[in-house]
Structures are given as structure tokens and as C-alpha cells.
Image (cartoon, rainbow, N blue to C red):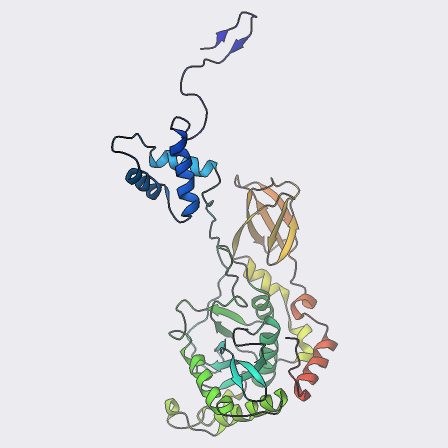
Length: 387
């Protein structure tokens, strides 16, 4: 009950344990040691910290419980807050039953090639027919470098012009294909571009080479056919020869898995998917509504900055009604074509049109610039991209 002061006021009873915080009743040396152990071993939980204390202090010493240590570590900011996984909007790629139902896409680790330096070959192979859809050599500075989004997009554009659009493309979880820096990944720009063109992207669950066996063998094949023991005067010569050998593999050289016949000898109609693509018409072929359908199947979680900003897909959004440092859930409303931001109480704290999915942003260039780059790739002696 409330106690009354001499001045007629009231105050709360002082009965019970003082509200001084977790571990407040334990000696300062034990509290300091708890903090020291956790900071020195960030992977240790409260149970491990308590076990270590038990080995250091004399038998009979009163030590804090696991729950008390946990509360202390949380108060000191030494416990990583739980980050929900969200729902990644996966696309389903069926088992390929016909030509160009599914391509496997991957980049070979960079190898040193005489005359042209380190090259990372972007390879694509049709899962059903074994056709080599593209072999695009990417010049990199050293063997630890990888192909970028721009390189992949141009390799895909050239492959699409030659063989048409496939129904789906299978990839691993490299960062250009999958946002692997968060537990709640958002589709990458390359993924969204493919979706807008009407091509599904599927991420393998098993690591290569178990799941990407075909394109992994493609690395070996093109390495032997094009790179191994060869010398090139320039990148243009390498790319031209790569295309020549790829056509030989598709039309003339025997494939043991196809009864010692070339893929196009077994399935002549496999030279094209029947879904034409043109760099000159890319703008008209892109349809952002396909992206809306994809995003409608996803859920993401992000932390609000001190300035009430959140970032998703590399784009920043201001949430006036959100609390700084709080967590928000993000979904996409396909009828309104907007992101919906909700706080932990499931109250809407913001709505916004998605950024980065206009046709111009998906293309990364105007149609005229793409046409000019295509011409440069076809006739350039040096690698036509900035390293």
C-alpha cells in the first residue's frame, strides 16, 4: 500500500528488491568477469560463461543464474538481437522436359591465359539438350576477381539473342544472384531484370558441383577447347574463337551422353527457344508487372535508422511514423503496387512505391547506349568493360 509523507503526499512502498538491474546483487568482480568473458568470447552463451565462472571461483561461491547472466548481457548490448528470416519470393523451376526449359548459369574461376591475362568464363548450358548457350570471357585484374552484374547481363543478352529466352535459369547463391548479407534477402537487380523479361531464376539448394553438374562440366569443356595451352593477341580474338568452338560443340562434335552425336544433330529445333529477344527491343520486352507478382510473395525485415530510414534492395525509404532503431516488416501489395511497412505491433508506419524497377533502371542504360555497347563488344579488340 502507499505510504503517506509528513507533508501529506504519497509515495510507493519501498518493499522488495531494489530495481538496480541484472547482477546488481553480485560482487563487482563477478559482474566484471561476466562482461570480460563475453567480450573475449563473442560466441559464448550465458551457459558457457557460467561454466567458466564455476571453474574460476572457489566451490561454494554464489554465482548468478543463466537467466540473470542473459539479462545482464542483453542490458549491456552484448547479445545479438534476433533477426527474423522473412520469406524470400522463390520461383519454381520444373525439371526440364524440353529444350530451353532450364539453363544452368555460372562463372568459372579466373584462369591466366597467355596474351590476355586473367579470364573468368561465364558459361550457360541448356539442361535438357546439353547445348552450350554462351561462353563469355570476362577480363579481370587477378585470379581472385569475379564477374560483375554488368558482365552477366551482357553475357545473357548475347545468349538470348542467339538462342531465345529460356523459361528458367538455375544459379548458385553468389552475391550477384542472391543477397547473402542478411537473413531477410531481397531479389538482386539481376534477378529482377530477368523476372521482368519473363525468365524465372532458381537458386540451387545443394552446393556445386552436386546440383550445377552440367555447367561445371561446361567449365572444363570450354577450358580445354578454348583456354588450355592457347595464346591470344587480344580479348576480341579470344571471344571470337570461343564462339567458334561453342558452335562446333553444339553442331558437330560428338557428345557421349547423346549417343556420340552433337546436341543440334539430336534435337535440331533446339537452336532456338521460340521466345525471341532483341537488344533493340529490350525496353518493350520488359514488364515490371512480373516483378510485382514476384514481390507479392515475399516478406522482409529491416531495422529503422536513427533518421527513420530503411534500406531494401539497395534503395532507401523514409518512414515518418516509424520509431528509430525499431524493426519493421515489409510486404508488397500487388494491387496498390506499393511496399507496406509495419511495426512490431503490426501497425502500418509507411507505404511507398518500389524503387529501382522502372524499365530504365532495370536496363542500366538507354536503348541507344545498349546498341552502341553491343557493337563495341562485337568489334572490340580489348575487353569492352571497365575493370
